Image 1 (cartoon, rainbow, N blue to C red):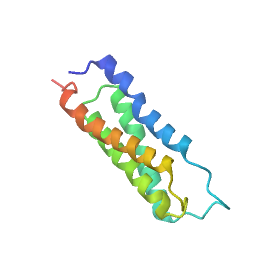
Image 2 (tube, helix red, strand yellow):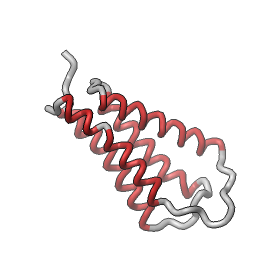
Image 3 (cartoon, one colour):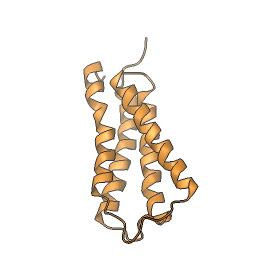
Image 4 (spheres, helix red, strand yellow):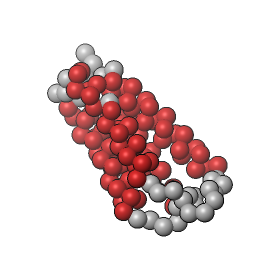
Length: 120
């Protein structure tokens, strides 16, 4: 079982993974594209899920592992939609790193569900 203190420490992991994904992404070549509306929806939903997951972990809430899974799925969706939106046309090492970090957040949430403190 994961202690409440460990939960608070784990709260920074999803946001560090997200920040790393953003940091390694290169600047798009040429002018910034006008992104389609659906890209904004995916981006906002992913960020909201990330914030909710970190708050849930920080407060050791029973729903936090599910929120981490949703945040990981959102990060994966952002990784997929980035080239589909025209933001980046060329995929490189950074894209695979984003995939790996996003999948790690999702899988971490799934694993956390087994060891997470249950409300009494």
